[in-house]
Amino acid sequence: MPMDDILLDAEEKMEAAVRILKDEFRGIRSGRASPALVDSLKVECYGATSSMKQLATIGAPDPRTLVIRPYDRHILGDMEKAILKSDLGLTPSNDGKVIRITIPPLSEERRKQLIGRLKEMAEASRVNLRSVRRDANRQIEQEQKDGLIPEDEAFRGKDEVQKLIKTYEEQIAAALEAKSREVMEI
Image 1: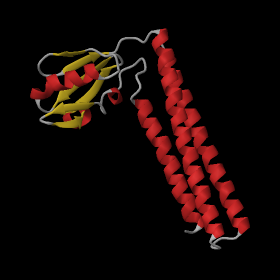
Image 2 (image 1 turned 45 degrees about the horizontal axis):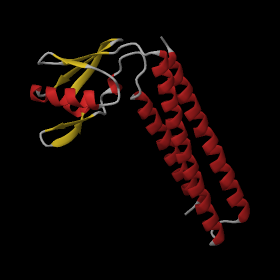
Image 3 (image 1 turned 180 degrees about the horizontal axis):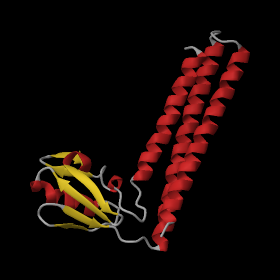
Image 4 (image 1 turned 30 degrees about the horizontal axis):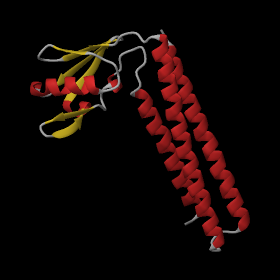
């Protein structure tokens, strides 16, 4: 495999790791209502499991309220159960047509717990980046060993992989910092 392909593959995997982390961060509760809090919750209905966003329209009419309008009113109870079972600590109210969720302000202790969770998620993403780096470096070494690329190109390739990982680690740090600030807002 040519060096450019190895680097491109590593970059795509690192970019995916950061994108997944940012999506996970969207699902972490901050002090304000966001449809991302509940859109990936799994709801068991009609003998199958679907995500909340596949079954309903989710909106945030104000910073403290989420409104969930199911496409089929018969699954309101199932949706309510899914919200209660989640670890979000939210209490839904069902009026027969929509589910309303009032987002209470976070306590200082809960904010610290959430920041700890954010740090764990960021570290898991960094581990994923390191795994991608290791795989790319192994691939470069194998190409060199097979005589497909010269030694100096292998060194340059490893340097490029290291630059990539630094770039994506900085993106992870920036995302963590931004989400931490958001969680600490009152």
